[in-house]
Figure (spheres, helix red, strand yellow):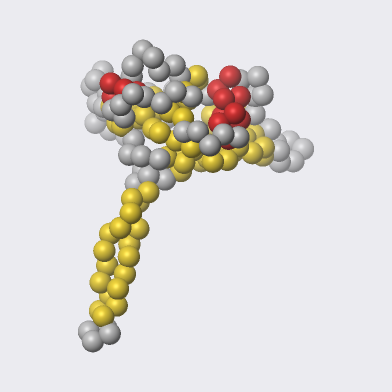
Length: 154
């Protein structure tokens, strides 16, 4: 399948998690047969991921000019919204990961066939119970630890 040339729906996108880390942080490492990913069920919203840079400033008194320098990169945090399903193996692995200091691998597969592999820490896993007519949900934050490996749709 060729890479899309127009905007695409997220309908059909999936996210899976692995307790294993790749031997190498590239397409071959993440895609190795030794990597076993568990699908995370009932995702309502994937949130955002990408890079942002810290901007450091210095103001020269003589010129009263602010100099800006790009500093550290932060690959962000994906804030997931899930329908709470305690028996879902992927959600159970998220709970385990939230209690751990270990890093995990995630694989996001887009409807186009593109894939984003990410090295993450599960920073938050909380219940979002709401009120009488609300669906029981979960909020999960995946702190992305390094630049995602992006595999284009073929």
